[in-house]
Amino acid sequence: MSTIETQDPLTGREVAAADGRLQTRLWLRLLTCTQLIETEIRGRLRSGFETTLPRFDVLAQLHSAGAALTMGELSARLMVTTGNVTGLIDAMEHDGLVARQPNPADRRSTLIAATVAGQALFASMAPAHQRWIDGLTASLSRAEMALLFELLGKLKESVSQQI
Image (cartoon, rainbow, N blue to C red; front, side):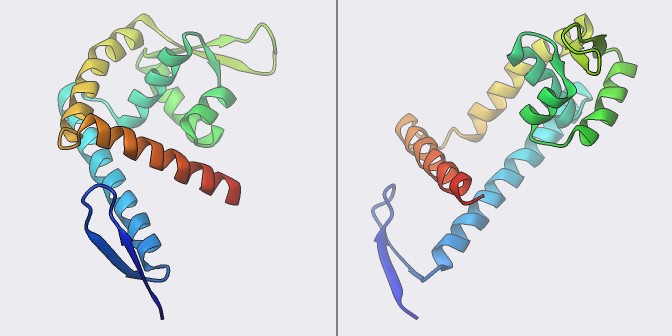
């Protein structure tokens, strides 16, 4: 088994890993970071706003769209199946955070829109969420964040080409 010697672009340290092992370690590091951040954000949403990350994500997507979305559009934006979103929308509608509306362009589909209460909840959560993300990434310089963003974009493109 051969060893690959590379230099870490952030630390300048030599990185040695057996063929394929560095790739696996990278994948595990990405997964760990994602899980740590997600767990922290979930906890903060629960304790600070008595809500869940999926509810935050729905309201964020509706806010970002600036308009009502079909279930299919919302599912695509959330990167989950429509079936996963249906129960969530049912519960959010019951709690007065979203409303279903007829789709004037397609009678077979329904539009989902944030209610005034849903918009108010998102408006209160969004600044806190941004502060949490800022705090969780505070150990990285702007240059490091930009480099990481660029490299993850390159990885995303590579993965997209493989699937």
